[in-house]
Length: 96
Image (cartoon, rainbow, N blue to C red; front, side, top):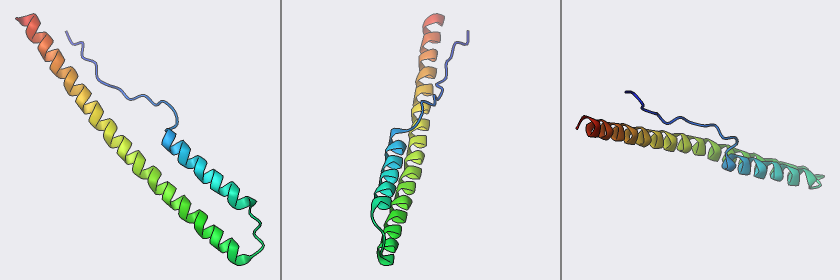
């Protein structure tokens, strides 16, 4: 009488946060490319800004992935413990 079901993870596509940050990076690149960059000083400033934004976005993405994985593990643990307790209660009721 082993009818336990454990919680499984579903991969439901692209994370909206990652997609949003990626879109922002692409948008910043388009804007930077659209600016007329005749002056070398301006070119360097734009490169610095774009690289800074890219590094910050990459850091945010990695932090978000870590937090999501941590939260997912916690949720799965709680769900599995709840299932185990419900199974124990059901067995106690059946065995009287």
